[in-house]
Length: 279
Image (cartoon, rainbow, N blue to C red; front, top):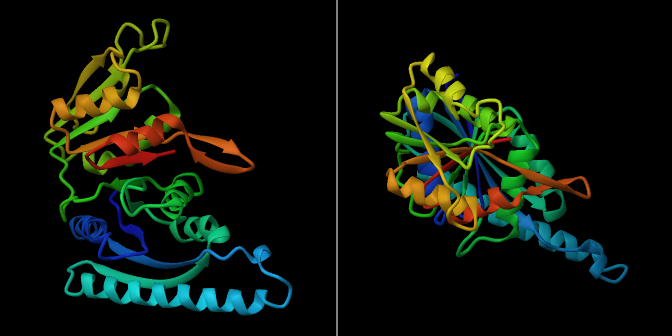
């Protein structure tokens, strides 16, 4: 299924310009529609103010957040002007405590969500919260774009991080429109279980499924020679010069809030190329 409805969230278009350009490039190549949600975030904690000052402080903070959202929307409209794909923008002032709900509701019906890498210079808890909400609050796949990404997503060489999980399979299925266009696909498996269902042919069933879609995939069985699985995956992605990594997103439940699991978080921190994830 092509990506006809693409959504991206931004707080600073100058910083996120590569993300918007990538999302727009996908909308143009897929014949889809891009929605850019421009956020201004109110970080006020109401309980920190004495009685009687809350309403004034909250209103001031929300007004500032709305101004930030409006400025971001104008920048987004300037960036999208002249695009061949259809697009729309929305300016939203959001309290930090409701950010997850707003993101999930806006991304719920998207075919693909495109977001910036949430770690690194200029990134904060808001970026992580947006990513977590998109991943765990919807069933939409998420493309995470690193800083400096080109305006078009390269998909000539794609690496699949495969561990036989339902999340990894969901990511592969969601990435099929990209996989069928790739010139080379590599299924990377790290230390496959000795007693797994496909122990005699690790990754064979996945390769067979992909072949039926016209995707010829090679299989790389890798030893865990480094402390973290993410390090092995990133090194292999560099070795094969992968343009994109496809993998499942994993989370842990804490007080009814899904948070990025260690392997997912480490991968996003370490990867120098875009990561396509689903949960």
